[in-house]
Image 1 (cartoon, helix red, strand yellow):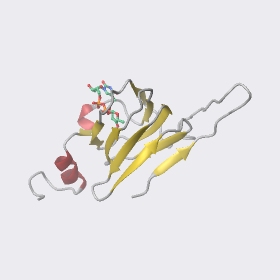
Image 2 (spheres, rainbow, N blue to C red):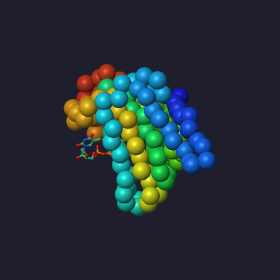
Image 3 (cartoon, protein in one colour):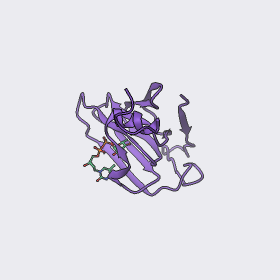
Image 4 (cartoon, protein in one colour):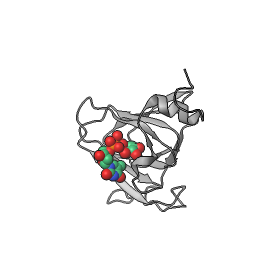
Length: 139
Ligand code: T46
């Protein structure tokens, strides 16, 4: 499984750092939605779903956390801890975010508006979906 991490260009000077992200330039899709996760409680695991169409770039702009990506065949754990790095998460990818530091802020740039119909929140359904088999046909 290929993990795609974007390293953004910080515009640093003696005052500090600034990262600017433009759609179809720094980000490989048109950005339709921005959301962020913060104040995640100790020990909490978020996610547990995949998206049918949505693509995202996930940036831990403060603190740290980890994300497990699973394409149905392989799974990888990726640390997110640099505000100038963005993890690309394609559609049809199961994700779980965990090990949040108390100060973690996860900024997400998304290719689509929020639509609960795009979510697959059951792992067996996810496997069936990516293998293009109706539920019940897979062991
Ligand atoms: C993802 C990971 C990284 C909205 O009303 N609008 C939104 O745009 C979003 C993202 C969520 N919500 C509502 C739906 C739920 O009632 O906010 C609540 C929490 O959402 P959810 O349980 O899906 O949160 P996470 O942290 O499990 O997942 C989120 C995104 O939903 C998901 O697309 O990839 O962050």
